[in-house]
Image 1 (cartoon, rainbow, N blue to C red):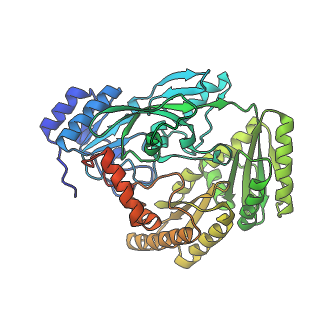
Image 2 (cartoon, rainbow, N blue to C red; image 1 turned 45 degrees about the horizontal axis):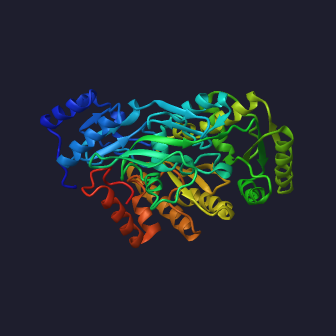
Image 3 (spheres, helix red, strand yellow; image 1 turned 90 degrees about the horizontal axis):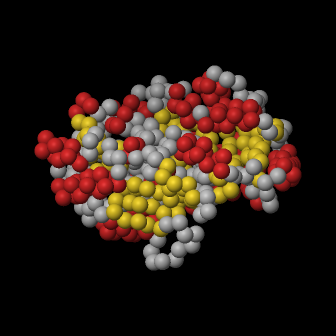
Length: 463
């Protein structure tokens, strides 16, 4: 236990002078005790909901002066305990800072507060012919959370990840100082890139209070292909050939029949096809029908040459909605099918995706535990879920550790990493140490100390 100050009535009274909404005791809902995957509850001593940068700054100044830990939090949709108050203290709920401040068509940027939801961005800009490419599966996540974990999503194959679309940030440091990093400029080689240090730092270096996001022109045309295969090995084995072709897909997702059936049951609606054991879901976008047709025709031929059973073209809004709504429900569908689950958010080189998935399938029988998977086959980011079902607590903990140890050992052997987009939080810390080694962790600790000498910002996370 770190030597942090515990909150008392005097501290609460001081916080109430700064922020109008301060929750304590029974006022704090248990949702604040955990993130999306639950686990061991860790209640904060106070939940503070600021509505401005000035309030965030004042809270941090008070916390820094009194050695109180502070955990920034958005919608709590994380999967690694990144927004959980391990040491009590103050939870800084940023959801009330949820305004879209500016849409700049000339510079192709939008400026938002961290509590803006990912799902709120497309309606705000699409009628202007603008597009924000990052597309994490959890659309109810906040932009602040996406920035904190450098979220990727389904369009990362063609467009990249959140990091590639953050032009500027306003942040509050641990001691309450407000700092502007980056800006609207398209290029910047002015000293160390502190902006990019914040992206992916999981709230351990600073609190994001404003973000300038890069936009691009909205592609007017898009088509999806649903491609059934006799086996998952054949489906994923086809991906490297598709990526190497001249026509890069916007997204390349893989899925198994069992996951599709779970999504059907969860949503109460039929999927367009469920006859095969495995599927690839490809999306292409572009400026004209001819451009897209050329792209998806080449991909279709590659799939058929590699054993695909068919190529189903989804070129109507209704079919696209059915396919992608099911894809978006996979996580919740799997979660609802079991008593508890945990996730391996691993990333491996693209050419080794099939080998890794085949290996993970062997663990199901080896350890006698149900495993489900889906993910972004185009960028090597795989989501593998281990399900508890009816296992006792002792058996669950033992088997879960064995499966995780085996999966991450195989990933490291292949030159992969512990997380592709969900971050480290506190759950994946042991695997990060194994992946990165002592020298890199020492360097990370030095960076952390430079930003936060007292270690009060989101303690116990990342390393």
